[in-house]
Image (cartoon, rainbow, N blue to C red; front, side, top):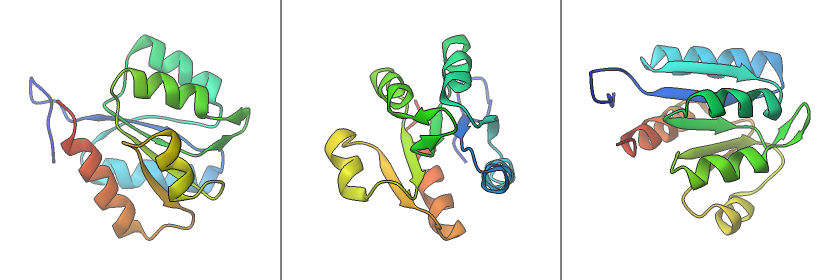
Length: 126
């Protein structure tokens, strides 16, 4: 597990509007020893949290309860936050065109693959 200066574990922002998936993602992140920010069903609520404190990485469903998450993804990308798109709405190719440094996992995603992606993203945290 990657740690930040001061020995703190990375903060992982989760934006997911499907309740059961949001709970599962949160539990997976906690089981890895990371701190969870959220989960947020709305991108606007997540944007407020990001304005208060940037996460270390983000796991984003493309379609939040209040629309596409791309404005939030743009803000996170501009700030250098690694992103994992976890969605049934985009392909790896779609993501690569707009966010070349982001990872993408189509729903349903095997837990082991998602864990690998989270750990890879946390390895990018400086």
